[in-house]
Amino acid sequence: MSGAINLLAAGGIFYEKKLAVLANNLSNINTVGFKRDQAFRLSGLKENPEGSSIPGKSQNFFPIMPFGTRTDFSPGPLKHTGNALDLSLDGNGFFCIKTSEGIQYTRKGNFTLNESGELVTQEGLLVLGEGGNIEINGKIVVVDAEGNISLDGNPVDTIKIVDFPQPYALEKAGNSLFALADPDIAENEAEQVKVRQGFVEFSNVEAIRVMTEMIEVLRGYESYQKIIQSIHDVSSKAINDVGRLA
Image (cartoon, rainbow, N blue to C red; front, side, top):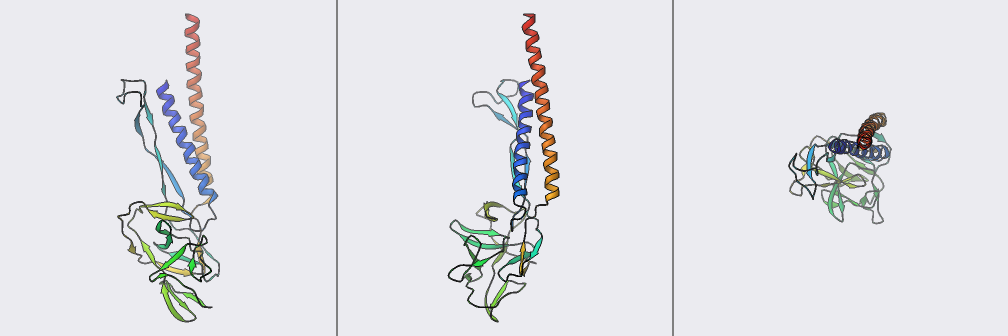
């Protein structure tokens, strides 16, 4: 009985984790550049530190269901803002952001200026151009589809946009930023991507879809609870019956 309960408990724990992932997705539905996560599980075997890992040789052997998350990098809807410093990417690619932990990448393009007139994220991190930091010292800012920046009609720099082999080996670093999970992967120049000025890319989370998934997960979790309770009731009854016979 204990093995069955362990297996069912592992399934219930996975549903709890999946629900947490869905709740986080839903809470970021209006976050610029956010990419939704998907929970997945793998069946496996684990050895109790005090027992044996050989099935049938120890009561300490039990199944587990380790889980992980993967990020869905599909594009989100674009929203027109009319702000000259708002940029979005139409196609595969990422803006390059200078952070204290090195270069990181984002699709979050609601940029602004710092006190020095440099293009930065809402968190104050520098946005990189092909020539380094981008200084905006002009009144009329124009960014064309290729990412070329001109101020008052004069060319200044080009937004640095890169891409990577898919599936992306990127992990979330907070604030819609991504860091390379494998430092050996090299940046590639993004191809067939267009910059759209005055637009931002919103989250790729679909509210109705997430809420439907949450309902399914809750039902699945309740099913595990009911089965565990049934097994517990059967075990309790058997123990009580044995006690009376004795």
